[in-house]
Amino acid sequence: MAFSSNSPILYLLAGAIILFVAAQSIFFLVRAVRRARALKIPAEKIRKTIVNAAVFTVAPAVAILIGVVALAGKLGAALPWLRLSIIGALTYETAAAANAMEGFAKTGQIASASEITAAGITASQFVTIAAVMSVCVVGGLVLSLFLVEKYKRGLSRVGARDPNWSKILMSALFLGMIATFLGMVFKDISQGLAGWIPVFVMALSALVMVGCGLLVKKLKWTWMNEYALPISMVVGMVLAIPLTRWLS
Image (cartoon, rainbow, N blue to C red; front, top):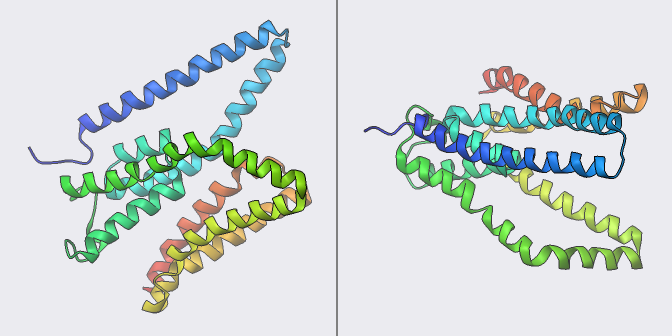
């Protein structure tokens, strides 16, 4: 039987895992509501908290949906749906999948990563990409079991001695993480104008993000805080289409 990245079996497996995680969420939601009632918290406040949490979940979900759609063209919908619904982060999953595809190109298995599509991907390619996306992130989970508490205690000690230095340290860690992903944006600029397309898309998305920030600051549109990321992502993806046609 020929392999298909959109096989019903893959959807059943992914759906079963996602339902299990969703059931856990419902379980803890019910327990939280019962505990709130036991603490005599007003029913209206409980309802408002649940509604607000649900509303502000929509914005991150939009960004995740964009990631699923983007990866589905290469890997089918089942694997991205599973990864981004459970534990995967949009920035990590897309980077991991792209690196695995580039690996196939560099080892001569394919001419370029663009050859891989959901309809034509082989079983070995699919398993390799899935392993890169899934196994590599396990290290962080395992290390978290042993290092998170020490890390938190270390940050607390630094913050107690010098709060300003603690802020600088966290900012430096964040900038280091961003710099890692910037490498993917700038890696092809030596190939000519077409290699600058990701840079231009990033710059345009950043301008949209700045615009959203100004709306929050000047017009007090606080709700925009939650939607700035998906809006900038969508605008960047839309603008990438004409940019690619003009500059390629």
